[in-house]
Image (cartoon, rainbow, N blue to C red; front, side, top):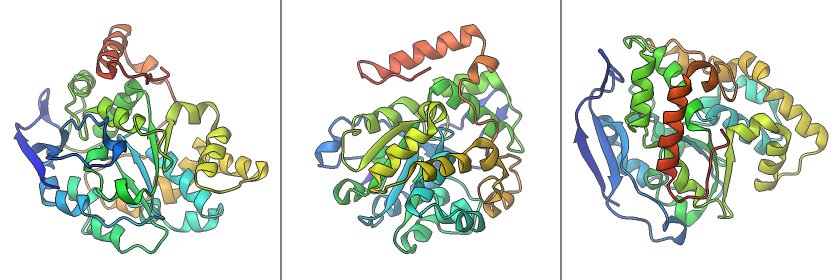
Length: 322
């Protein structure tokens, strides 16, 4: 399936060039829609990605999918790591010791990593392709840029989203810890609402998966429901994966997935991949809270975000919880 990559000007926020290590950007969009019925309501909006992505687009779209693969898909900073660890543990008999010994990016690699950042010599697509079954694969790509075989082979997909205000705040803190970028909060918030951050647009990313939430191979969850009742989400995810967990096992996993436990787990919070990035000063787990936007956004900015979000959601029946 051919991919259209449209050049766009370098993106500047204030006085500094964000993502300056990625150089130029493209808006990426497939030139056709898969024929499967689950794709009928996709918005297919062009996705903002580094120009580097152009070299990898075909390899990712043509990636050979296996029936027993498990994908975790999110927009960046929307509970990705939390969801990955939950899913991996459920599918691996709660093997906490093995999990601690093996960094999460090795257990659950990001398929498009090589296409969005030159931070590792590893070919991320090949890394995923060469993994033994059962493979666990992470992606931030929108539905229409994921491997096309997903929609025919139908592996399990767990999609997690988060309210856009918290997502924007978390993206700001993520980027502000990158050397060479002087953080400007207001500029970043404007960029988020202009759909000018990596992997944007935000809402169509969410809505395309919301439209597929009734597919048997797709589970749609939110960061907020994980914060509100993690054991219930664990139980729902285990059932989706065909696993039976006892109440004691659910409680043990919930404790393992607590913020304090996750932050202390170096296989998650301090991986070799993160340490290898010379310009990156960031702890993957920052606060682990929901609703932090209330502390960092003005009432006026919150109102603007809410209006923008409602406009982007249009006539969809999906609404964020905050």
